[in-house]
Length: 240
Image (cartoon, rainbow, N blue to C red; front, side, top):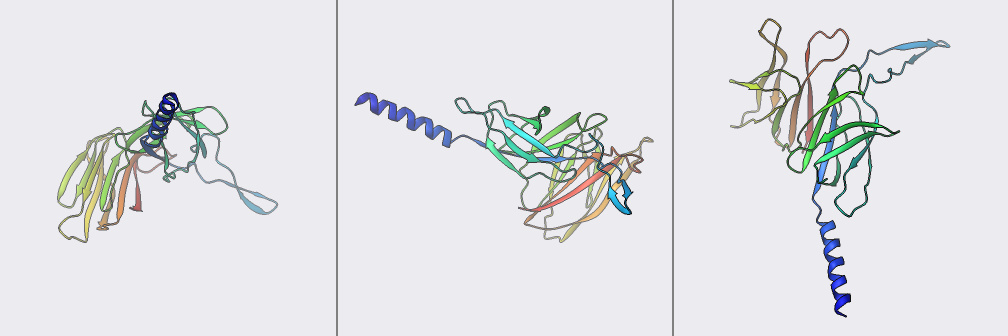
């Protein structure tokens, strides 16, 4: 009787610990310029030519977090699209706080370190000539409604003008601001350093005060062909 009771307590403790496993959420945002649009005429009809292999990020990934001790490994499918946030994926927090992002049809693609906290936004960009040489910057994905987030995914400091406030945003860092004092909007400019040492605006806009919306401005290095500006900004907006 005592042996049965002990086994029951161990089993209950194990099930409870699995239920209480810390969860983590991951989203991936691929950054970069799309390849030039090309089309051809076949039988009098225009057809889009698919982009060459490696000119866009892989569409289908297999996310494989290392499972907690005693649990079987599980992989999750994830779809990517250049310039768009992936759907969030939630899983037990791996002991090493890392995720393997593999190609769906086989082969490794990227190791993603998880940010502090319980949610990660992985900003992925090309590290070489194609998307089979990716790099990643992981930041906490914890923005709240009313937040205005600036993310610097370039290798140089960026200038941020927030109303009358002039700020410096270092490479790989983020900056969060909120519109206070009942103002309806604030003027915002994002500046990058030119080869001559001057600062040039890559974005000038008005940011509206939206209490239930998170607005993010992702600053990244242009990687397209014949780009006019070396630095680009991807504005994102989502309700929280």
